[in-house]
Image 1 (spheres, helix red, strand yellow):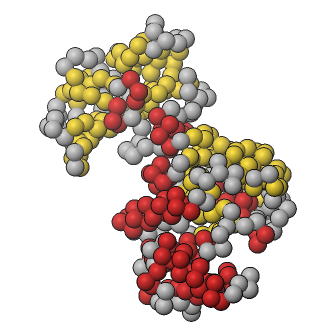
Image 2 (cartoon, rainbow, N blue to C red; image 1 turned 60 degrees about the vertical axis):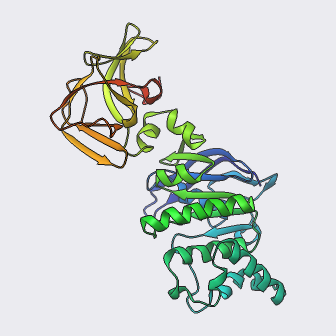
Image 3 (cartoon, helix red, strand yellow; image 1 turned 180 degrees about the vertical axis):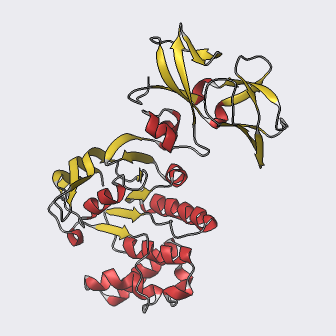
Length: 353
């Protein structure tokens, strides 16, 4: 089920007649059968977008289509959506089976058929052996699976997930996001996943939509958006550790940071912002980019060098190098930059040069 949002805007009005534009002229197409992540910081409009897709909120202007059908005026119960909230919203007095069967009972489905469907979907999400337990007897991850099963049992056209992993600990988040991806692949349901966690979105999504203050910043495959950000905001938002930024310039076909020649770069001579991913640095024997290491962090195979006062013009930054190259604090190094790991942005507009 392909989903299209045409020039969708949502404006909230306070009692003081003050207007807040939560979503501003959103114009995107969500591919059929894929898992799309709506990603952005708090207040960017991603949950508002999800609630407009579900029918819980009505757009101030614009249209929403499920396939060729316009659903903008259609109430939530008639849209064929499954919605999973951040807080699970399970009925505490009901068993797992009763929670999953609840939507089927509402549509007066035959009891035996409803029980069989509930069991099948519970087996799919890995909780088929927990059908007689109540929510308080389940872990957070198991409760989330019950909520997903309840949304899926109706065989919805679209599955909407509103920050479904935010209440889980780190290990459970990892396990549950893998399960969500597996379930989506097996069912083939068009799924929209809202999160502010960029690592979560990058790992689970076929495509991500990056939002800022209600405006689309970039849409694409996660790795492509990471490798080729359209603007400074997207480059900053994606990546852990975050991208390093330097004041630099394009000068005579070269990209310069202070006196250091970073790379050949064709373009009009100008002052620019240069973004370099932490994994984009290499330790070399010859380079004009010289730094002194202040701190060293080693985790697994990676060693992160923290340079607080680079000799070249710039702020504190991080460089990730192979841990086999042992480096001590106070060491002076020469660095080069991998060609695909730096980005050049207009200093005024923040757009990619």
